[in-house]
Amino acid sequence: MEKTKLWINGVWTDAQDVYTLTAPYSGEPIAKVAKASVEDVERAIDGAHKAFQSFKKTTAYERAEILYKVVDIMRGRKEELAKILASEAGKPLTTALTEIDRTISTYQFSAEAAKQSMGETVPLDAAPGTKDRIGYTKRVPIGVVSAITPFNFPFNLVSHKLGPAFAVGNTVVLKPATQTPLSALVMAEIFKDAGLPDGALQIVTGSGGELSDALVTHPLVKKVTFTGSSAVGLKIKEKVGLRKVTLELGSNSALIVEPSTPIEKVVSRCVGGAFGFSGQVCISLQRVYVHESIYEPFTKAFVEETKKLKLGDPLDPATDVSAMINPYEVERIKQWIEEAKAAGAVVATGGEFTERTLTPTVMTSVQPDMKIVCQETFAPIVSIVPYQTLDEAIALVNESDFGLNAGIYTNVLTDAMKAADEIEAGTVVINDIPTFRVDNMPYGGVKSSGYGREGVKYAIEEMTELKFITIKTTI
Image (cartoon, rainbow, N blue to C red; front, side, top):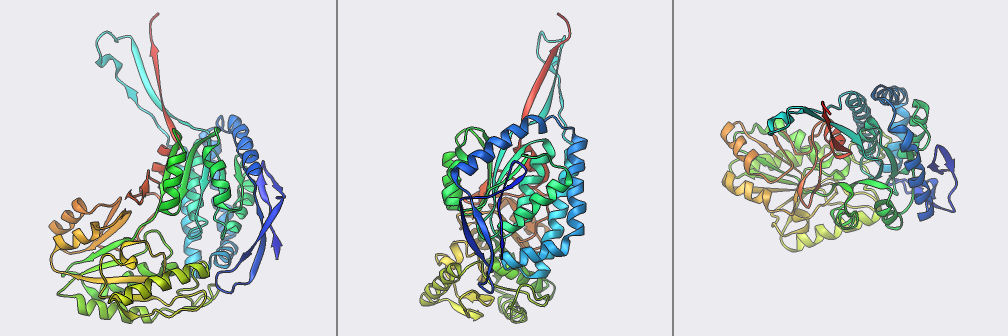
């Protein structure tokens, strides 16, 4: 069992305390992980601020080259990185490989974006008395970015913080999830090998509850970017003050299935969207609203497709679904299912538990106020609900505190556009599941799903300041 350290100012640094990291599927110890103190965080922020003074002066070409080298190194270590991810997160190996591919794409998008930061000229002579003035804008880096990331996509969600930040010359203090520190720490090696200056990336591992105040309130931190629960995000929002902040929070993503939908062509995709990585995805398909005319055949096909999924060891290439992240989450969702059953909900398939796993579960006869419907399950469970009219379906989708991604299957253009206009979400996906995401699209939600947007181009806007320069051409 290896012992990890903190990555501060370009060197591996011991912490005063450690904790034991265990594998979600087997429960076996993986590593002893350094547990940072508040003093460690302060040292990391100070170091990132000092590094920023020189890193902000690097050229777009130099920053792009660093990111391109990260891409090359990751391609050469792809299998190794996927195994790290499968071991510490319990993500099936095939899914882990897909995440590594997406992470590589995100860093490549960031490298390309480093060379595309542009401003605009402002026609000051449009105002009276300013014929001898010109003006233009430019995007400038803001400084130290504090990044706090979750367990479910520990490579790719980290890349959505680091890639855009480094593309424009910011420095980053990263606090990865307690369960998935190894994915972040291996990136320290990769960025070092790619030529990132010492201090530009700082990594502090440990308890978010103990470290978050220092990470979000330190006066040298100019932006906080957080992906995680809505409850924690709200607390961060209250503390950041005038600093910039991006919050990617919870969801209970919904899909409308209209009568024109060819069931046989979409059901496998829907099952994948519901149960990929045991449903522990912010935009996992949680609610499916199916027109009453096709409800019975759709539900039957969905259940049969779900039964085909194999639950097992994440390192087995044949595994489709593996463990939830820890036994506490298994117990939580078990209680939610029992509450729903007591109120009349029916388990169409699944609902079988071990200490660490839940078989993919399909629920019917649910009510809107059940926790499995109105809250974020973050588990391999989906509810299928019939509806009569599109207006009713849209109202059901919107009857949520969340609004990240939503989807609709329909072959009727006017219905598709109606849904696009009326669904309350950051993204509306037409003729695909709400779990769809690629890494250059804007990504973020409304209501309790968050604040601000990610996606490389859009994250860069959030990680820079707009500066205006004006020149008087005569004195």
